[in-house]
Length: 135
Image (cartoon, rainbow, N blue to C red):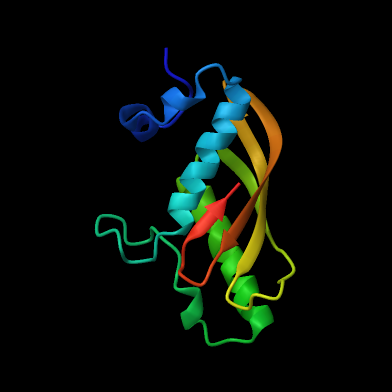
């Protein structure tokens, strides 16, 4: 029996690593992995979905506050559109540490697994290379 995961996770064997995990923990790990892939994708890089991906945050020519607000809003809309297991998504910018090229966000929402909804929170860190790690 395989663990819970998306179709691609089941096909490439990632879901098998979650055998024995509770459905809820497996779902959270699956969503975190998907969010990391989603948020690391730049707008315009998926030819069949023109609205898939985030704008390059380095190209925002606004004040830091306005850029963070715009990024937060873009992330919320993107997740609502392309991660159906999460609803009522709220993204909050976290304080920056000494690394000026790193942005951190908290992603909160309702995770639905097998008809049950539970409030969840993820941490997302965007590094200078444009890759996002979600935990």
